[in-house]
Image 1 (cartoon, rainbow, N blue to C red):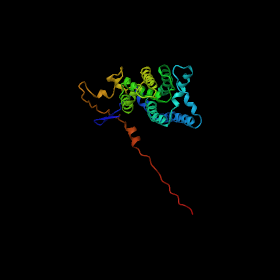
Image 2 (cartoon, rainbow, N blue to C red):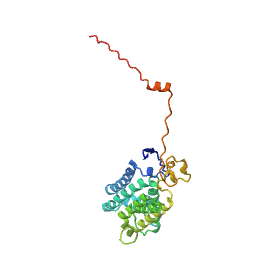
Image 3 (cartoon, rainbow, N blue to C red):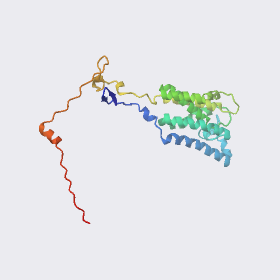
Image 4 (tube, rainbow, N blue to C red):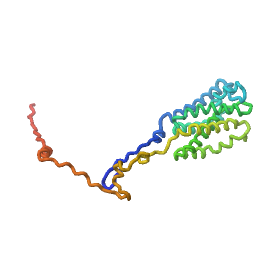
Length: 267
């Protein structure tokens, strides 16, 4: 509602892309990331307390039996430091994913595990590749490139925040540290970029207003009719109220009579 020179006009705003509805908080935004982190800690507890041998079910590149590790490796970790260092970024990034990309979040996570795991199996060196870092690189890469491709200020701000927090991770896609699966990191980075391209059109767009429609006509807008060609405001005289005849006016002005009856209370 807009007020101008004592007159009030209603301005209707239509959001065709429903961007504000996409960026709404729900319990699932925090519950799903917590469940994901809880799952990897539950497996780690089982690994330490029950069967330490499950650690060997990681990705074993170029070996047929090593394909099983594509599904299991994100839940397996070498030690407490390994799982701790993966838990915080996994929670933060999946939280951002479920908030800003709710409709495709599970697709990115599940398909990201499969594709990055398969790429690791293809290009990895001989050994046992385990850990959720491949998925973390999928999320970092996807969120960054998706925001850049979207060209929407909220998503671009998210991309810059991700780079600020985890930009240094780019160095670990190179073989700079012994015992670290840089192939898994590189596979995750490539997978995130591929998904950002695949889901390029599924982004929230800036709000569009009614006057931005292609078929918008100023002459049909009651608010714009109060401005002339030079943009000067034109104040219309209020429409006169219809006059009442004597008979109707007497009915309106005639007040009802109210009678009060008091009865003596008998004790």
